[in-house]
Image (cartoon, rainbow, N blue to C red):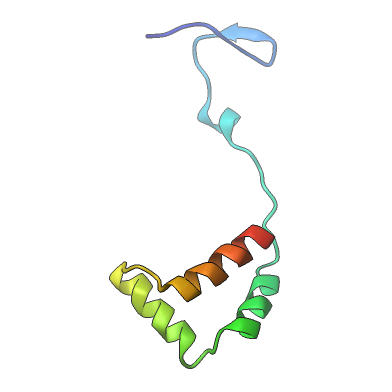
Length: 74
């Protein structure tokens, strides 16, 4: 089904997909890396989380709480 739409003040039946793309700022990932270093042990916590990701398993509740709180602070 094709209907006219208004793009740039003109009626048209075709819209370039690029019209819907939005440029967004990439936030500094170093800030979150610093937070991770404050709460997670690189030698034990990070490998445990990597195992969960690799296996697509549920992350233990304690880690999930930390992840959720960091995500909310961003």
